[in-house]
Length: 259
Image (cartoon, rainbow, N blue to C red; front, side):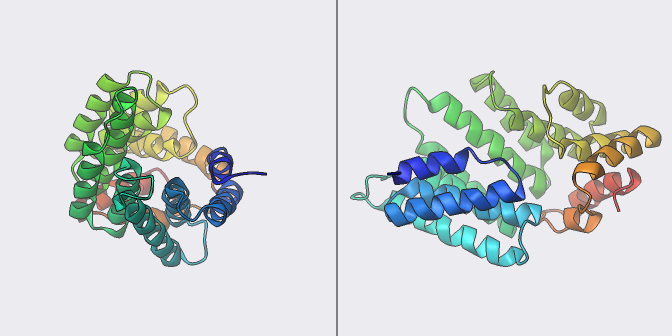
């Protein structure tokens, strides 16, 4: 018989697709049913709802964002409870930080990230966990409109964990684009061993801003084969802390041919 821990492990193994996200949602719901105090199920369930919101894998995006916040709040409540077994677990505040910036409340998000970082104390994991948290916080700074702070966080993460996960470089490439360092954005993506399809948006926008419109539209065509329903409006719907940052991103995508 599976336990809450087993269900969470199964949820983490699901692919990052609409179908995989739905399966992961089911796994975390089963974990909570098995153990209503299993904090990771709430935290990771929150991220499932956040992915549905970000990728428009749901008919009601705001309802998914609301559910992400509810689950993250429950994770924090368990992490604040000295008797829960999850007291001061940094993951709860980290996942809630992601919800806040997706709501556009960047200042509270940054505070939550900082609180989470202070709770990372396991000497065997402190470098990796801090690196991952900082690289994730960098994404919030990208949308806030401060790519230089984002790059500083990612540089620090790379120093802590040279064997970091691929998504650190994904965030680095986006930060380079937003800092108008297009050649460095392209070099970062092309240095990744298996970049996901979404990085083609950064690649195409960077080529477009460099005036390489034939290459930009070829790359965007490759992106569209995998994500035919993605549009300029969906890219615009993310919360930003700075309108100029949003406009810069949309300008590159539009020049590259995203409809």
